[in-house]
Image (cartoon, rainbow, N blue to C red):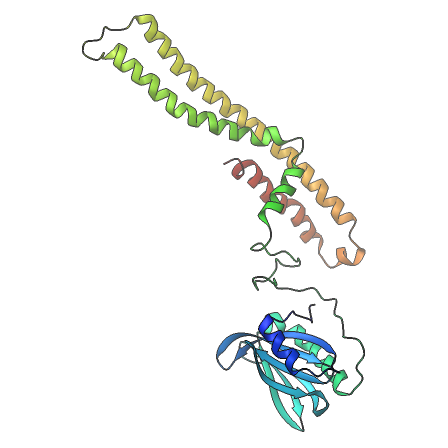
Length: 294
């Protein structure tokens, strides 16, 4: 869990101007609410003071030696970070509960240690972040993946690497689509020739010979048969490539599960693991064979 955020330039300048030369910068965590407004402020904590900074201004400064009994209180829609200052309960800041409650729970313990004058190295917490640092949205459950901020280019490159040996079959529908677009222009052009030169010639032009008309009919029928054959081949190749891709993905997932620690596997039920292998792979296969070519 991140306990040392980087201050924006304006906030950093105010903090450096206010901080004593003998103070050690220990923690920096965000707060999000003042009165009824959402803000982007920071609580910068040294071994002697707590600095409350917002938009390049020092809103408050609390001396740790005068503070005791640090607590967090869950309120309606937000939380409060409290301390007893000279025997009086004081609200230090308010913050959004889902993102920062675990962070401030650690801060309570850290500030208690600092207020007792014990100092030492900053506390480190190995708990994983649950929200994206860039956009603030929650990660996909039990992962550190943000689908909104993750590079789509990296995802497609990984997907391309996984399709080795199946690329011709997977991209055959793309070739079929290109031919279909071409035939949409070719067939009307041939029909125009048939009408203007054989069925109803333009006034002043001689009617074409029957052999040419038969050639046009054969060409139209051939194109139609060729399109149908391409559709059949596409269906068979999609089924084959889909099955091979499913087999490859399930083997890959099974091998990943095998290298997990025993504690990681025990935290999940058998049904959950089977669902990952079956359902998740089916979703990816549907995208690869159905949507990706389009």
